[in-house]
Length: 229
Image (cartoon, rainbow, N blue to C red; front, side):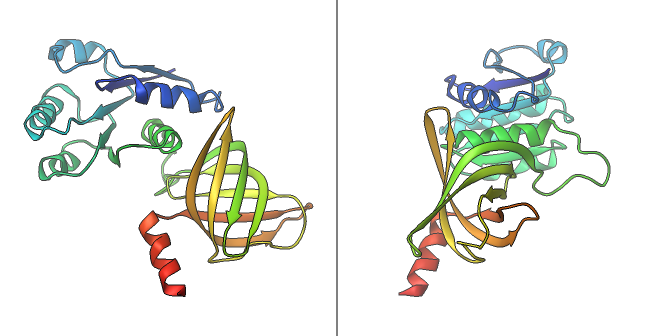
């Protein structure tokens, strides 16, 4: 069981991680928001987590207090995930302090948050660590391409911080390299959407197609669309 401690003013991040982890039962996580920087260094030594998630406050003065506390009470070996609305110069100094640290801009999507936690707490072995480690899944997914006015229904087979791999039934590539798509992932009664680009499409040995995708930002989508006008 991997212990994940969250320092935040709410339990929103805890709920996001737990919601997605329900569909990844092999990834046993114990998530708690009980940690605070009010506890002394001794408490942190006795309750060292497998990963620490810190929701940074907007106030730069309080943020500075958080940063100094992290350097003081958190061991350098503890993987750290920072959630913040924007990167500051003080936050950048943490990259040279902790051995493994990630930063995600808030608000954060549950899938990105969950994958970041798994990335932080997984030892992929020497020579096997990837820039964007992949995580197996089997979620119902729809790729919608507005330009071609088509939708492809399939199963998401793996996710990474940078992209995804999806398999659909039927031969013949409905989508091709370079196509911009909206990826809709269904989890129970909720849907999550990502702007993505098809990197490659290939026929599988069995009946079906495989699609490799990379996630893109809204700005990149706009740039692509404007270039077509």
